[in-house]
Length: 181
Image (cartoon, rainbow, N blue to C red; front, top):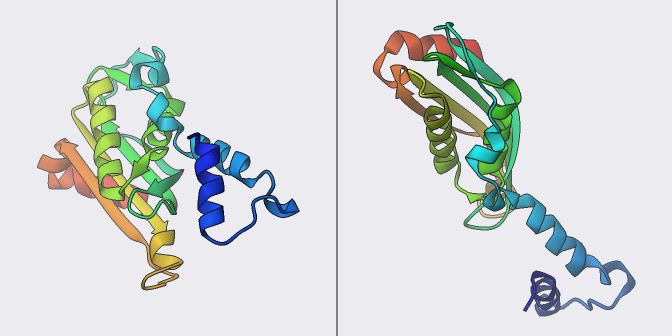
């Protein structure tokens, strides 16, 4: 059974008529949307980076903040939407600026929980750059908490992952946290 056929079956099970005008193409559109929302499964770090790693003598923090992200909760298949702040301490190499956002997107475009998304982004940046430290903070609103269950509209989940100097040095961690405020 194709993804499109599964969507038709779901709509039918919900009591809908998939032949009515408004739903006639919905299974097809929903299947395409889900494939797009989960395209991270078909991407890999090497292709994303595409050689955009450059020699640099800078030893100061590199921070890309407010990277918008869209992901799907693996528990309810509902969206969570927010922003990621990603920093690293170069160790002779810097990453092309857009590649940080592409790493965030690659992992966000998979069925996820936010805590794991933080870890995956941090470990990927660490792997690619061999940085002295990596920090990731994600702030997101979860539709599974807003649209169902407790229905808390203003809740925001914040998660973090600190590696290397960001984990070991309170001063480095504090500098990062003050820069993202």
